[in-house]
Length: 341
Image 1 (cartoon, rainbow, N blue to C red):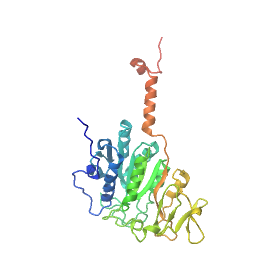
Image 2: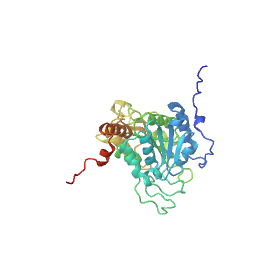
Image 3: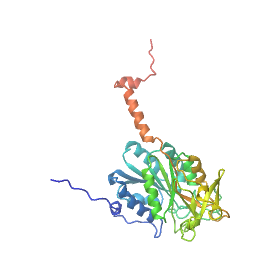
Image 4: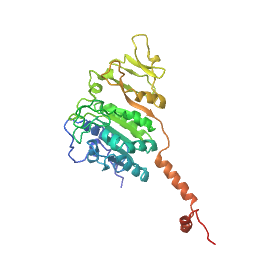
């Protein structure tokens, strides 16, 4: 009797029968659709995929993915994912979180996950607002943001999520957006390919409480001149016809016009393994309303493999086992033993 060959998985195989309960028009729908499209291409059995979330609108994600998952507690998805990866390193673990969940109550857990470098994927939905609790300002809200909790405008200075990730020594740092499905899919694939903790910030529109927060980066009229899509080994160009570019004046990025005596040879060539230039890229975070501002970068800023926590832990455990005897009494006594005469 011949073996039955299983049919290839499709996006529908990763969708559940649960009603998707986000507000109509929410950017989360696009992100969910792209994740479901990418998953079948990874070649990972559904039973080996785990989606772990915290609390927030984005954190409903596990209900809508036909994989294993956990809707955990506020800010602690990273801690729970760390424990799972340590005990089951063969699993593909995805953390879905929001800017409030991962950078406020969960900020401490986020930075320690990144520095430890567990082989997991962090999808951080950034809408610069608290959506689930109805519109308070968040750690990424811009200064002077008027919300229900800041009626006179926020006086907080916002986090720059990718700069924070670089500061925590993340081994993979990238940015994409909900309204560019092809780019989002490409970044999900790159995050999955990376061996280590991948931190992917996704600009996500909350059309109820913060509509249009990223409109200047997503709309056809403004996107070409306001966004800079970086690709490894390629010069940093932007504009409707690629007529503008970035060059480095020392450590300072400057915009140049390629029709005014400059060529692509004069431009900054992106190297995603260069940690120093990656930090400069993350700091290109100008207010798009300010005069002379730089375009906002998207793509993989930094990718460098280093040892993963779970692998080092497994090696340490094996070494410990090889050194220990099977004498339980001796193990309990340890080295600190006194004989009283």
